[in-house]
Image 1 (spheres, rainbow, N blue to C red):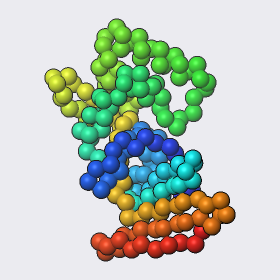
Image 2 (tube, rainbow, N blue to C red; image 1 turned 90 degrees about the vertical axis):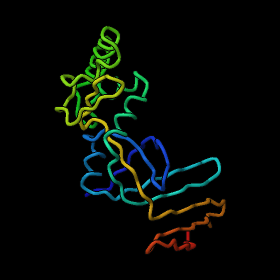
Image 3 (tube, rainbow, N blue to C red; image 1 turned 90 degrees about the horizontal axis):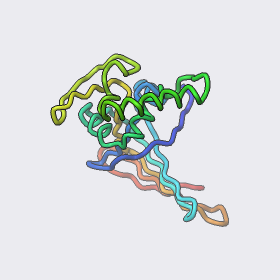
Image 4 (cartoon, helix red, strand yellow; image 1 turned 120 degrees about the vertical axis):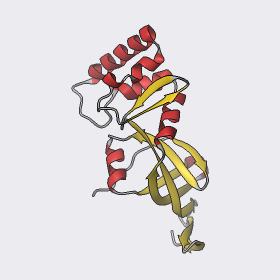
Length: 181
């Protein structure tokens, strides 16, 4: 499998897990299902620092994905529903037309109307009740939690003799080592 990288929004860090949400049917969604090993990178160019984090991901409970979906602004939910992420489309107008149709539906029938099961690209796999409103969620939105077992801290230096420190978990203990740049 070829390496793959994609920017995602880190939604939370809690209980030693980094959590992010994504489209389950996207390239990254499929890749994380096949290979749970993942890497995150945080980079701050102004201060010449980065942190690399590696570990395995697990899928978060569906209820968390539904709660995240419902917490998103309507425009973001419409944007997600307008796109079958990573699929080839004929042109940008195709996406804009889908977006407009969903905006009109939400305006006419309310924001929850865009989550009706007949609008999903794939048949619904779960349904739950929240505040007496029936929400359907298929594999469009899911969350992954990364449990780190490796950190590398990098501090850039003008002479290119950068500082690199790694923290590697081994048998429940963290081993700290300095690396050559």
